[in-house]
Image (tube, rainbow, N blue to C red; front, side, top):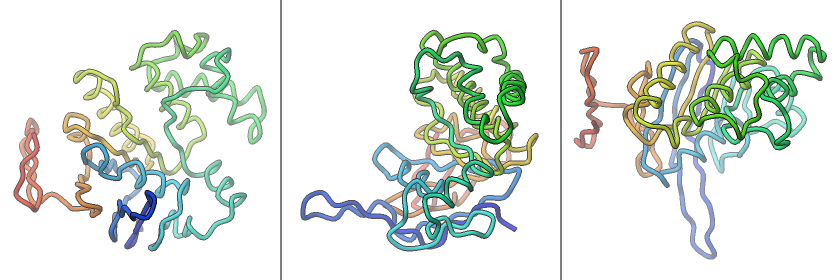
Length: 244
């Protein structure tokens, strides 16, 4: 059974009298323990797709099924309950309160559900799982971009979600660090048994995915061909273009 399924999802925005349709019958299926990456250039609709998959936006048409529940039909309160217990969103922007330490930031969302002491224990465990335990007492502004990304993943995973979603988690990183974050997300999916959905604008962050999709003209396309060689860097999509 799929953890997340999008069925015939359509989304449009209006710019004055003009309708801009960014998603046209988009469909995907994500299983627990799998990393699915959606590749597309900037402006292709990746952010809209990620926010619809999370329930932050509602589609104009179609269904968004998480654990069999259509997120588009839930009230704000019901959706908040689902987010607390099942969906993690990687927030690369960090805390709204700049004076919080990284540990306080990671623990804050857990206070309501598990209490302060247990929340801090889980925060430290999550930071250690991603190799950034030394950042626990630091402020967000003092971290490197890579450390921020790893801390953001830890913050999302501290709540032990079933589904983890990231919109362009490697933005602003160099090629080595983009590859590292891709590897970390794949490991997270396999080690913790969560479904991980990411949107990426470059191939280096995409090649760690178990499954690949291209977002083109509002539609999600599966690659026609992917080399079985472990060092392959070329993916061919149905329209014949090759991305490397």
